[in-house]
Amino acid sequence: MSLLPLRPWGGSERSDRPDTTLTVRLSEEERRFRLEVQAARWRAMELARANFGEEARGSLIGVRAGAPWRGLLRLAVPFEGIDRQRSREARFLAMAAADPVLIRVPLLFVFSATDER
Image (cartoon, rainbow, N blue to C red):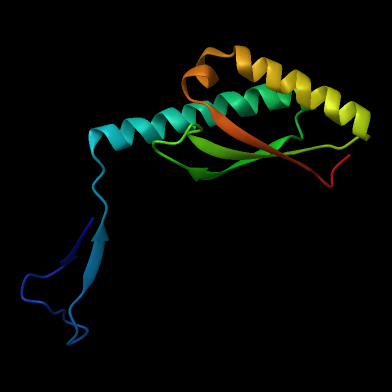
């Protein structure tokens, strides 16, 4: 990252204070890492919708390099009783454990209930 003035002389027509912008420059490795995590998120959401229904929602909470899990994915799914929930979670985790994308880019899944039914 670099903090650079928009104008090399440090000012603008509107203000006597210098304008600044934050420029994020990702290395090729960082860019590939993020794309891999996004691909894994997409694949996990496809599996979640196939298992829990179209109302399943997900959000990537964190991305970690160098950790056993590459990211934390929160899955909001419909809750239909504890026994059914545990069965569907187990089926989803088995599907994820066999998926080639999620084997290569492992995510940590956190399940929560949606308000939709």
